[in-house]
Image (cartoon, rainbow, N blue to C red):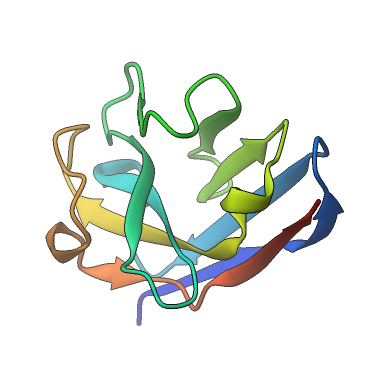
Amino acid sequence: QVRLVESGGGLVQAGGSLRLSCTTSGLTFSNYAMGWFRQAPGKEREFVVVISWSGGSPYYADSVKGRFAISRDNAKNTVYLQMNSLKPEDTAVYYCAARAFGSTRHRQPLEYGYWGQGTQVTVSS
């Protein structure tokens, strides 16, 4: 059974930082591209960042470029999202997602087969 479990969300003031984690089980983590998506109330789920299964440079949405950083630890089956200089518009539920042998070309929610339950990030002004 594949499971993705996010953690690390919370309430933070604008300009602050949070680090999200997504720990996986039931899959060969090193074979999966890992993406982060977010969904604000009343809005569609949107792409944040993806890191391919084979390494290389991640691909970031323009809205988070320079502020967010994704990393993966294949030994721990975990992907991280370091979020700095947070803004109120970053407020959303953040989801991690996995796609087998995916690349940085995969930026649509429908391209991912496995999802976590989400973690709430709230940035106050």
